[in-house]
Length: 169
Image (cartoon, rainbow, N blue to C red):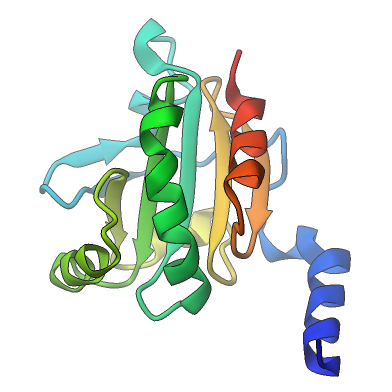
């Protein structure tokens, strides 16, 4: 590990709360974005809702095709979608400022085909969430509150499962 890697790690460890405007127990900002199939996805239909079918919450991960760390973690996230769905957790990935043609090719190349895919073309949803770098993943409970945030790349399934466990009632 070189001195630049160590410095970056220290910044991440000691300043992680400054990387997002949101923190655990905050209410997740609502939004409506188009999914890759052209349908509207409204967060309030899935979390923060009084509907019984809202499940245990949402994993909301922001990414972009140019982000190397995103490229590394998306296949891992994809591999756990069915397991998490069985626990009542929806997995939603939100691309920042790229169109669906770009996303379709990018995700097909990674064999990522299970999460709900949204595009934040104008970046306004990422702005609401205070996203300052990618990737960043928010764990939002069925009550609409942020339960946990992972800043940076998710490296293994255990980390994702443990964080998702904070959503299960």
